[in-house]
Amino acid sequence: MSAVADQTGRHGARIGLDELARFCTAGLSAVGADDATAEAATRAMIHGSRCGVDSHGVRLLPHYATVLREGRVNPRPTLAFSSKGGAVATLDADDAHGALATYSAMDRAVEIAGGQGIGAVAIRNSSHFGPAGAYALAAAERGAIGIVMCNSDAFVRLHGGARRFHGTNPIACAIPNPDGAPWLLDMATSAIPYNRVKLYESLGVDLPEAVASDAEGRNTADPAAVEMLAPLGAAFGFKGAGLAGLVEIFSAVLSGMGLSFDLLPMGGPDLSTPRGLGAFVMAVRTDAFVDREIFDRGMRRYVGELRAGATARGAEVMAPGDREWAEAERRTSYGAPVDPATMTEFRSLADRYGLEMPATAGSGSTPPAQAGAS
Image 1 (cartoon, rainbow, N blue to C red):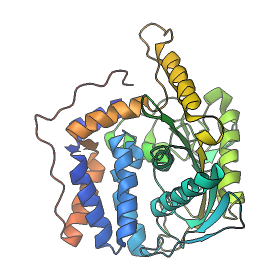
Image 2 (spheres, one colour):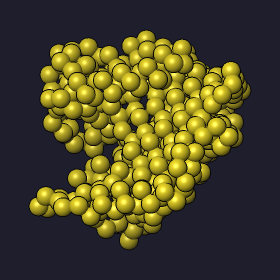
Image 3 (cartoon, rainbow, N blue to C red):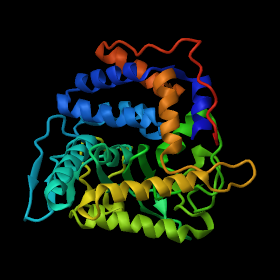
């Protein structure tokens, strides 16, 4: 991830996070999004760009502006929660932007967990939400464990298959860590997300081995030749396919929304019809099970032992989230890289709506190489 980000920095532009947030908010507002939508979508995109998840960062802005303008996403939705009691609720998002729906659902889940110990919300009639980790983190920042998952349109073959079946179906979990930033797992259940294929294509970089396939299900390293993604696990891809199925059931079946192969493709050509995505979030209050001191002691020992363990020659062991937090620190100081194709889209958006382009970082703002980059 970071190696690609460094190439983006050399061949694209590096822009401060505040400037990116300003431009994203202005761009979304210009196409008619209400304040809550513009703020939530920007918050999610900046999380991606700050933490090095460039495939789900500000490069999504042009797409979001288009679907808000064309009608796929409701720019001024009315969110409606319902509950049959207990620790659960359902959110009808009214075809809102996925970030607004999911942040709102997680806020409600954390509130429920405050009284019940656990809170879970199924989301109906949502849309693409970007980086799943952003919403799990929203729970961890309030002292709860956050779990998030969402299905998406079919683009991932089954293990041994040659048909698009599952979406990239991301899952994320964030856990409060008493000694620093939260433990953060954020992953697609495909070998890579499709947005990263497009990022590699923009950069002219070959794909890693066994992450994507051509139309006949054969592995390809050429981003332009990709017709489907491989499930996580390479030779053991049945594990990734099974995990994608778990996300499918929690996100779509439990919410009554469409299965991945029923959904309209994210990229169109129809950008006016709502896609009706489902998602699922859960918040867990740790002190509902053990005293907070006991939980903190267990997390402290677990993460400490993980980082201090023996490593292979030339390798480094990290806890989930360590790489993202290190990248976030660098990008807070030096700005985030924006790939060439996205910069071109930014200029088009700025010209169309009379927006001020985000200022690029100075030539002296080149960040130091990240340890453990790959």
